[in-house]
Image (cartoon, one colour):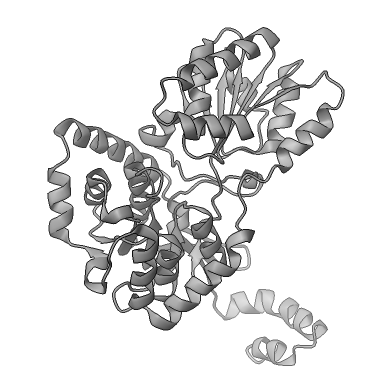
Length: 427
C-alpha cells in the first residue's frame, strides 16, 4: 500500500506513477481472444461448447447451452423468501430510477417553416454479460436487464459462466425477476463472440453490455463495430474522501469492500489528517484478519491501495479529477460542496452513512460504471445504452424555398453538383 502526502518532495512523480499503474491489461490476451472469436465465427456452437468445456471444467453440448425456463423457475423457488424479498426491493428501486431516465421525443417548427424532430426507439436485441468467475453477481443481472427492459428492448439474452457446471440460483432468480428467460451458461470471449456473430443456438444481438475479465473486455473491443458495446470494463476502483470525524473502522471496511472484488481492484483514501490516515491503515489490517476473501482483498490493498494525505480539500478535488475514478465516497460534513468540485467520476456517494456498497445493490442508479480513468469521457450504464435516436425533417415548397438556395451554394462549393441540383430542381 502506498502512503503519499502532497507536502512531501517527489509527490507529483509518485502520484503520476499511481495514475499510470497498469492494474490489468488486455494486450496479453489479444491473440488468444482473436483466435476464439474466429473459431466461434467458423464453427458456431461447436467452438462455444469446446471453449466452455475447457475453461469452465464442464462437459458442454449445444442442447445444454441454454438454461431452460423450468431450470430458472426451479432455481428461483429454491431461494429463501427473505433473499427473494431483498432481490425484489433492489429490482423495484433500480426499475424506478431507470424508468425516470426515459427521454421524450423532440419536435418543433422553426422560423423557416421546417418541422424538425428527434425520435427515440429501443434496440431490437441486446446481450448482457454477467460475471461468474470469482463470485456470482445477481445484482449485475438486475443492473443490466432492468434498464434494457425499461427502454423497451424486445429481446434480452444473458450469458453467464457456470464454473464446474454450477449456476448460482440467485442469479437465475434475478433473471426471472427481470423478466428474462433467455439465459446461456457460457462465459468468456466465446460468449461475446456468440452474441456478436450468432450461432445455431445463440442468435446475434445488436449491443453487448456488462463487465467481465480481461478476455471479455478484449472480446468486446474486437467485436465493436459488428455490434455496439457499453465500454471496456477494467478492475473496479473506489476513492474515499474522509476527515478525522469518521470511524477508521468504517473507512477501512469501505476500502476493503472494493478490494475484495479482485486482486487488481484499487482502493484509495484521501484525508487531511495524518493521524487518521495511520488509524485507517491499522484498521484495514485488523479487518483483513476476519474477512473471508482476505487473500484477494489483501493482495489488492498491498499492490494497488493508497492513502494520500492532503493539505486542503481543494487539492484533493483536483487530484481526484485527474484520477477520474469509478466510485467516489465523500465522507465530510458538507459532501455536496465537495462533490460540486468533481467533474470526472462514474458514481458518487455522499455522506458518512452512504457506503459505495449500497450503490452496488439497492440505491437505484446503475453499478456498471466506467473504470480506468474512462470517467473522463464515459458514463455508467443507463437506459440510453439501449435506445437510439433518429432525427427527422419535414418541409413543404415554401420551407425549401427559404433554406434551399444556401444549401445549393454550399453543395456547389464542395463540388457536389448532384447535391446542388437535387435541391435547385425543386426551387
